[in-house]
Image (cartoon, rainbow, N blue to C red; front, side, top):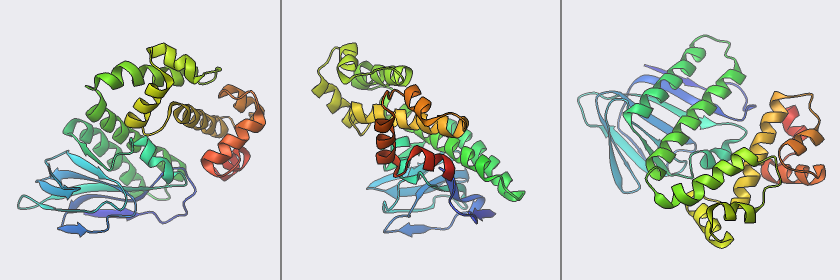
Length: 268
């Protein structure tokens, strides 16, 4: 049995607040939920999780991600139940809902669970051998969140014809052409629907409008440039993510993150 808690300040975008494995899981009830996103996965035995009026049986390598403050409980359904788990925090913790598709609960199948198990075990090994590289742990945490995002999208959208026909092509266009003068009208013409209809589809499937998704993606790419190319000027980064006006870029970045690009770079 091993459990590790974060014992350093929150200075990175994403961090594990706690990690554990080979944990002999006791019955747990949280009427007010947990304050962070919480992932629980079966290693041995079987467990039962009750959340939002549904019951999930977790066989080996199956897991579940539960959003903050969502009431839930779980208990063993076998003679013994061993689990691994992770909870998530970071300076960009507020962006985790968007990463996981704004889902309150994500059930993880065994195939995805095997990937997550390997990622979490790798992070645990770094905690076992201090001093831990905080930047590397942040990247590990981000990879884990992306794996959970993949599971969420695969489970809910792979067979949805409206998402596949209208939303996915627009997302791909945004992620390919974000540095260009992308307009909502041009994206609508791409899939032959009205701006109003496409916006409704985006809100339904992605949780935001087309414009908000484009802005969010551009700001995300700007963060990558800020941290990866530390000598690159803010004006050049603005241009590379689709903003001809640097002042407008700084304003949008501040609105999205609460700080200027320069402050974000300095903090990280």
